[in-house]
Length: 125
Image (cartoon, rainbow, N blue to C red):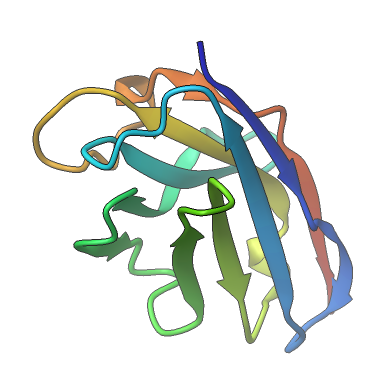
């Protein structure tokens, strides 16, 4: 069983920064992938960023590339999402998720097996 707990959300002005954390307990093998997704009101959950626990590669949505950075601390079993130059359109509930399938890192939410409860990020203009 895997538990994922997000933290670090909040209210920030446009242009500001936040760092989200996702603490994982249970299975976090290096071959598994961990991703960040977000869901705004009335919209579908969308991919933000992902990586393997091994840290071999990182993947980003075009909308956040150059502004967001995904990283992990394997000693703490924690994944981070550093968000810079935030925009009002980044406002959403942010979720971390773990994909235990071996293969290419997926950008599709339904491919992920375990999810956190989410943390709200609100960017004011």
